[in-house]
Image (cartoon, rainbow, N blue to C red; front, side):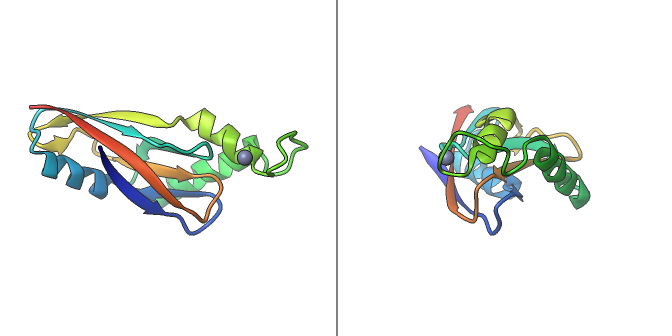
Length: 131
Ligand code: ZN
């Protein structure tokens, strides 16, 4: 199983991992197929969204924080229920197609690791399928 390591530096963060995922595709030698990305954490997630304008990721984080405040009288004693909820909203997996050895992303699309309870060292599992 391939994996990449992600180091977050703040509590909530969107980290562009497109290049790291493409490197895994390159090493696999697969030209046409797909990559499954899987985040094995309950307070993190993975998503695909605009990578050209950095204000988009800030807006996403800001909207998530309004939707799911850090402290809102949750039951979970660890104090990170907001991160668990955001992880479930965004999701822990993505599938990205591969064409001619490249991730088949739209012009503005990048792959982002979402950190909900950083800073931490995290993992993303990546399996490449195809020929
Ligand atoms: Zn927790």
